[in-house]
Image 1 (cartoon, rainbow, N blue to C red):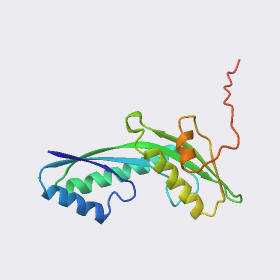
Image 2: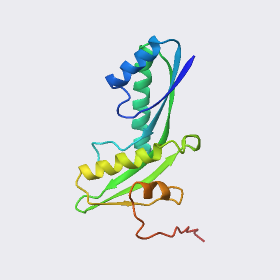
Image 3: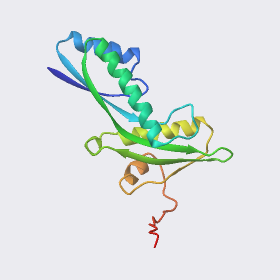
Length: 160
């Protein structure tokens, strides 16, 4: 049995993808594993990681229903999440979060998650994009053209 990995988000239910699934199924027995990154909802200016993950899970559930309605053997999971803040009245948008499950790292999912949020910021007219990221994300952000201009120091407050 052939196995296919489908990495999709907003295109998950699209006709182009469904047609490909039909063609793969016509070639013989196969199984599909769908992974969905949790990306920001396009209609909101702010959201939480939990809201983005819930939207991704709903999108995954609808996609699985559609695949299974075709007779496809399919399962899936939400593998990454991050959020953005688009501060009205300023030229700045901020990217926050951006966690990817360990077994899915190194596959371009974080890069795609950064890209979709950055594209949304440009669409909304923001000139600057601020990212608060860990050292793990730095090489990816640099390859995308980000330049470090400062750093932050995390502090922990423990009440006495």
